[in-house]
Image (cartoon, rainbow, N blue to C red; front, top):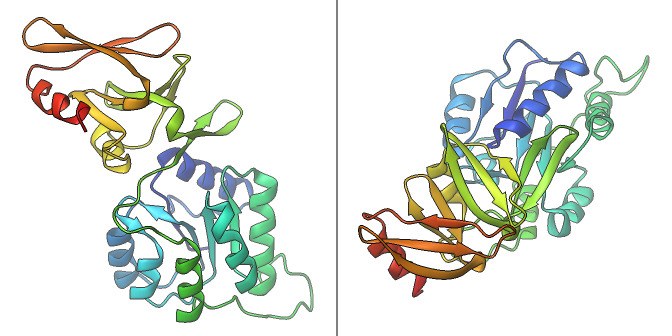
Length: 266
């Protein structure tokens, strides 16, 4: 199958490819695109894929903006963490979805549904070719409205993190600070556990609410909810003590100190 994957989290994309390989459907190096802009450019210059596996929130915005700009005629399986609002809309429109974090059995069930609708190889002898539900303007409008986005930028509420036993959902509110090490960004919780994130520190920073997360230096962001005390440090820097166990102390850079002070004052 010619499959396109729209996913901004590297570990989630890797899991999707692994599941496709396990199902015997993965082409060599399936395209994985992380933004609406790149997905639009790809669709405009390539034949329509047989299937799209599509996250809802990409690096540069909501994926429904892509489907409003480009008419997609192949099946789409959405992967989402928006269980409260979107799932009733998905069910009402017959759209296939996978709620993050999902396992292989759930992934296989979604694939089987679309192979049945499209009369695929696992549909069974004599199975009717029903055709996938179209992403009509009405369906897209219903799905977009189900999100009820408030005005202004939308910020990440949770990270899906690849752990030894699968994907772990880490609420952003539980992240005490974010730290870059050797080019990899890690979220650190109150217990000091480190969770590898997809993307650079700058990319992660753009996904977080600046009212809650402030930059300390070139390699660290801190969550204001975990800041216990701030003290003067040498060379015009600040020592920031966090409400973590054990207590962590981070320092601002001299260049970042004035901006950090303004951020602290709200």
